[in-house]
Image (cartoon, rainbow, N blue to C red; front, top):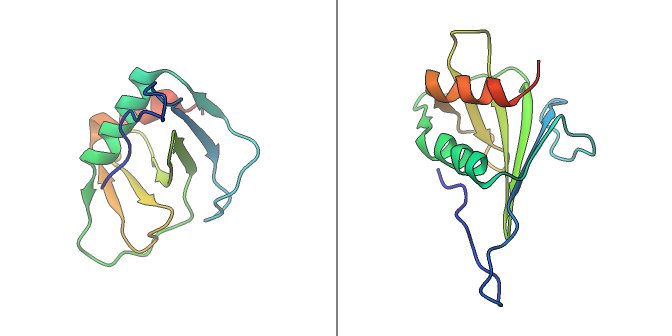
Length: 119
């Protein structure tokens, strides 16, 4: 799964990267209120690693509505639905434009996401 890298604009300067996380309202992909907004490039790099390290589930799955919606944007925007479950459970993510494929997030990466998102 591809997320983002640091891209440059026509002036050869880094684009502004940011991430936002909202409490999900079903599979809605448009939000005006976010509970987390991230501009720290190191944290955004962690998010990139989490998405790129997620494992595709090969089985067909029925999912409950997501817990969170995450948007990562720079020159291009990427949107994801997140399920973090209870403590000690693995998280999952789904690309908002491909709601037929679910990805598992490692225990370590799920913990990072839980620490970023206020409960």
